Amino acid sequence: MIIPAGREPLVAVAFMVLGASLIPAMNALAKYLASDYPVWQVVWARFLGHFIWMTLFFWPRRGSRLLRTARPTAQAMRSLIFFVANVCFITALPFVDLATASAVMFTAPIIVTALAVPLLRERVGLRRWTAVAVGFAGALVIIRPGSSFFDPWALLVLVSASYYAVYQIWTRQLAPVDSPDTLIVYTAAAGALVTSVLFPWFARMPDSLGDLAAFAGLGLVGALAHLCIIQALKRAPVSTVSPIGYFELVTAVLFGYVLFGDLPDAATWAGAALIVASGVWIAFRSHGGGRGRGSGRSSAPRVGRARGSA
View 1 (cartoon, rainbow, N blue to C red):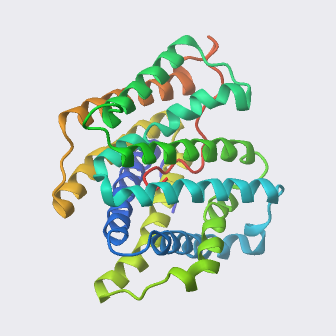
View 2: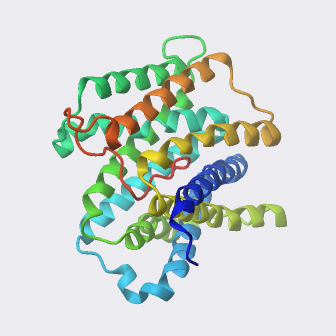
View 3: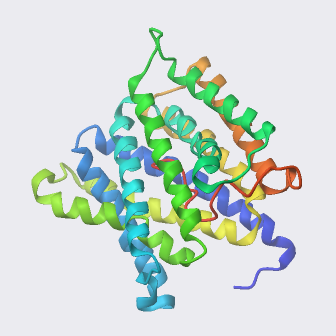
C-alpha cells in the first residue's frame, strides 16, 4: 500500500499510539499470569511467541536471509541481555502497578544517554546531563529508598531498565551491519531457547481456557507492539515519534485501574512527570534540537525501542 508522503507522519503517529497501547496490554497479561504461574513460564510464552510471530511475519519476504547475521556472538549477547531485562521486569510485575512499572522503565533512554559516553564515546552536553539527573531524580521519587514507602520491586524494575538500556546500545552497534528484520527476530532468540530447554522443569498446565488464551496472546501482543513501533520509525524521524511513546503511561494507568484496581499515588505521578520531561528533552536534544553544540549522536536506537516488558 502506497501512502501519500504528506500523510506519512500521521500514519507514524497512529502506529506509535497503537504500539504504546499494546505494550501495557502485554504487561497486563504478564502481570495477570505471573501472579499464578511460574515466572519462567510467563517469560517462555512472551519470548517464544515473539520469536515465532516475528519470524512468520518477515520470512515470506526475507527467507533464510532473515537469520543471517554478520556478528552472531554480539547478537547472542544482545538477545541474552534483553532476556535478563524481561526476567527482572516480569518477576516484579505482580507486586508493582502497571503505571509505576512503565514510568520506571522510561528511565531506559536516560540510562542510554549516560552510558553512551563510556561505551560509545559520544559527547553529551550539559543540558542532556541535566536531563539525565532530572530523570534519575524522578526514579528516586517513585522508588523512595530509605523511606517507609520504599518499594524493592520498583527497584527491580529499575534494574530491568538498566539491562534494557544496555540492550539498546548493543542494538545501535549492530544496526549498521544487520537488517532491522534480523535484529527484531534475534531479540527474542535467547529467551525462547533458554526457556524452551528448561520448560519441562517449570511448566504447569493452564487452569482454564482463559489462561491458555492469555499465554497464547502474550507473545502475539508483544510482537504486534514491536511491529507498530518499527512501522512508526520507518515513516517519521525518531524525534517525532519517540515522545509519543510516553502515551504508554496513559494506557498503563487505564489497564491497571480497570483490570487490577490500581492507581498511582501522588509521588509516582510526580516522579513520572520528571522522567517523561527528561526523556522528551533528551530526544529533542539528540535528534535535532542540540545539533552543532556538542549534543552528540542520537542516544536511542532506531530498532528495539519498545518499552514495557523491556
